Length: 154
Image (cartoon, rainbow, N blue to C red; front, side):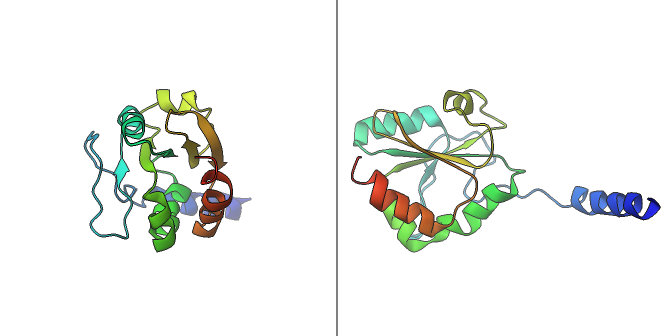
């Protein structure tokens, strides 16, 4: 019993001391303008849902919304792996892409029934829900989803 308790204390100390890294591409300020990609291999994220929906209406593009939190490890993994795939980045250039920090914006996640993170929702150009993905998925999953299910209907 003492070993279990000691292991727990050590684990908590190790994980508690780890610095939380902000999600790449997410501004520390409350900026709402689109983050411009540094190169063609980056997603141009917006950081306010209402601005993203307005951009979708004016551009006629569908929307992908990534609901995340800075403390969410699987959310960071999406940024570090999935969202860096060049083919997926190219496909997502046909979408208005929005990242919503659920610790800062609690209204938008409730609007789409977000209960766990990460949650990615795909909306039509009018903001209507087309698809919801809960949890981490790799780039192959999203490429297949977009090519086979979303692209024909958007």
